[in-house]
Length: 396
Ligand SMILES: Cc1cc2nc3c(=O)[nH]c(=O)nc-3n(C[C@H](O)[C@H](O)[C@H](O)COP(=O)(O)OP(=O)(O)OC[C@H]3O[C@@H](n4cnc5c(N)ncnc54)[C@H](O)[C@@H]3O)c2cc1C
Image 1 (tube, rainbow, N blue to C red):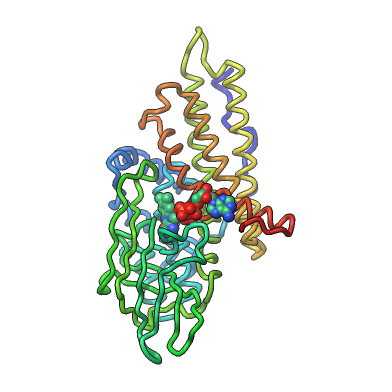
Image 2 (cartoon, rainbow, N blue to C red):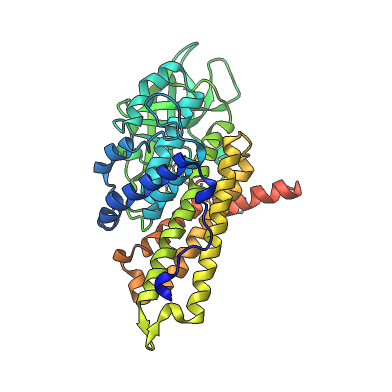
């Protein structure tokens, strides 16, 4: 009986185009063959598998959603599906690709000059240049508007001088270019406004110390960006956006991918726990035959199906230009919670083996604690949705 059972009662295959199905299959096979065998070793060592970067590029994962400049130009659903497969393996690996694509290439694409796009995007799509996104600071996390990093223009039409510190920046220690958001005073102005700058690795006064001691997202490199009187040419200012909507626009792109990723992590954990409990015998029967185990499996299975449908719905809305930032908040919030809760329950179902790296579940539990917090904490998305549905602001 158990041998003919299927892991999913409902699927979304018939709702996908042929191209989307092929992209999904290719991404799954690639991630399974290339990431799964090495991820545990990197996680334990706290290292990122840099050797995979050219292969991510070959698969079209870097700048996947962008058109031109050597990017794959995937539609939002295909892009979501690759995020799902990357995060099925590891949130840190998905983070690398998300930051490169949504938080660094996207703002250059959307807010940059033609010269900036020509200079950075082709190399970033090939994985020859790495980017990062610096918004958070030691004293400005959920409230990025309180940032202290500032840029002052040095004379009319002059360079900008940047000072400040960014904290918790994915990829910063290996980045060639950093999108830094700073309160900026143009020459002659006395009211600062948030602007984005392309800060290059070799600019004098830039350092990117690595954050050590993380017990989550260990296969992702995290660091600071310290800016000490850094002279940034005016040509490196992103001209097309001003104010908090600049960084928030990037985060909306990244959170969309994370919403798919949360389901991917959940699927990995659920499928692992299902197989394990069908194989593991206690009291003379597979533990999947016990009612308590089945209840856990059914809750996970049903939640995954709903999370996948939400992601697909958001993807189709995005394709039509109708997905709102608050819709993305809902997707990110609920699918990351789904991922974390599924991972925790799956862990319990493997008993002692659940804490072992080789079973690929405990790592998701630890990783998803970060995903729950970054790109807008779970609580902050709750408040944003609460405000949208009541019209009342509970933020402050
Ligand atoms: C591994 C990792 C990688 C990251 N990568 C990046 C990156 O690449 N670039 C970048 O810019 N940032 C990055 N971040 C930063 C991340 O986005 C922040 O950690 C996040 O925004 C939360 O900020 P905080 O850590 O300062 O927490 P705080 O803002 O201090 O929040 C602490 C707690 O208070 C709650 N809280 C805050 N305000 C309210 C409120 N009004 N009502 C109710 N509860 C509230 C929060 O929800 C949270 O639970 C990363 C973080 C981590 C851990």
